[in-house]
Structure formats: C-alpha cells, structure tokens
Length: 186
Image (cartoon, rainbow, N blue to C red; front, side):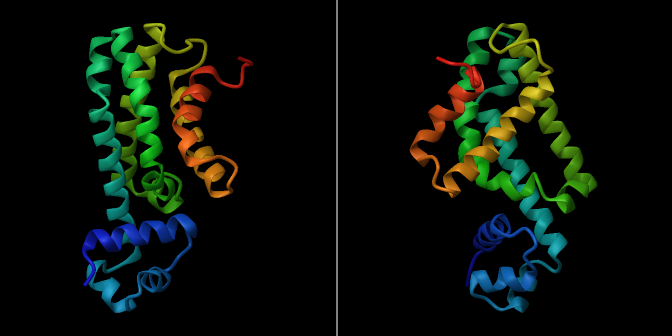
C-alpha cells in the first residue's frame, strides 16, 4: 500500500506533466485503482488542496531555513545577501513542488490557498524591499517585480532542464548570476 505522501508525490508529478490530469489519470500513473485514490482523497479538489498546502508549507519552511524573516528584521546587508545566496538555490530545489501549485488557476482561485500565498509573497517582497534599502539588489524596480522575476527564473530553470538546454548541475550558479546580474555582459 502506498503512503499518503507517495500518493501526493505521484499526483504532483503527474499534474506537473499534465495539469488537466483527471483522478483516473493520476490513479493510473500511481498504478492503483481510482477507487483507491478516492479513499485517500474524496475529490480532485481535495487532492489539489493538499498538494497546495504542502507546497505552501515548503515555501514557508524554505523562507525560514534561509533566514528570511531574521534578515528582514535585521535589515543588515550581509544577512540579506547571505539569505539571497541561500534562497535562490533552495527555491530551485523546491521548484518541482511549486510548479503546478503556483500556476494552476483552480489552485489560485481557492480563497484559503490564495490568502496563504499572498502572506508568503508579502514576506518575500518585504525581503526584497529590505535588500533594496541595504544596497544588496537594485532599487530602481518595484520589490514585487524582483519576486516575480525570481519565480520566472524557476519556471525557466524547469523548462530549460526539461528540454535539455541546461544541465541541472549548472542551475544554482545560473540562477544566482542571472538574478544578480541579469543579462548584462560580464
């Protein structure tokens, strides 16, 4: 018997490949009957909600593990820079968890999910505002733009590795340098 976490992991992988996957598709990818999947999750919405909650838990945990709340509170350039250096590759590891969750319209329309997403994004924006004030990142763009840019790089990393355009081992450095220096010549 598969654990609930196994079911969630396989369901997420299936939904990342095809966001329109039905419960039957997900059960088939797991190699279980649809009835077995329904014993874990009564509806597709219940499955999506739990996948979403896990992704948001991961996002929050990564922010804390990289010291984001403390760096924002301190406002110290060294602490903010260290957090930025840690958060970029950490989010890269988390990208597969965020992929479907943060792009699916059904997920984004769930009020509880949307409110929690906004709170996590607000911390991220506060981090970028603090980093701007400390001179760690450019201050001529809105902090929210930096947050969206980071997310865009995660999407780019996913697609580049999926298409074989970039080696996975190159991603942490590419992520950091692209975010920090953009496309400016070196």
